[in-house]
Image 1: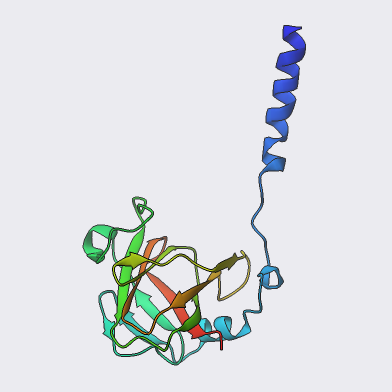
Image 2: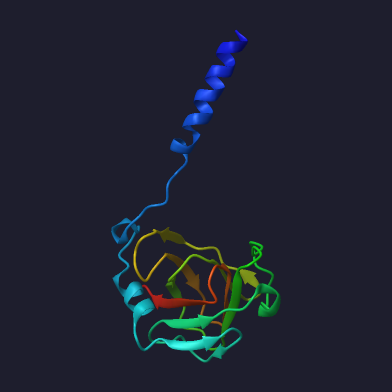
Length: 169
């Protein structure tokens, strides 16, 4: 009896990696069209900003944000997910927020995103990501009010990242 239990346990453990969900791969695996976001993230005219910059309005295209080690980033709010050692972080403040509505916030590479408005973390209304899609790694939908907000990036593996914030309208 004991032998069969051990055998069943070994079979289940051996199949565990196959049961784990694999991340989608390829640009066609996103949950919604990403052409605009991908174009903004790869546009040659992206503004280059340092962590801590304050912008009066959303840029018309994507931006490239220079990141620093988390201890140097001075993020205004402690991230919801603690950054790992050896990663990078940064933030941008938007003082004249856009009109209220649904916006996509997209990243060129993997990182954690916190959107803070009125002192509260906003929860994404949707999330989609895929590997092996040049220029974009993930995109999220956030409902923004027409008030200032802060975009925080943490857990990035490189010291810069492209970001695009676009209205869905």
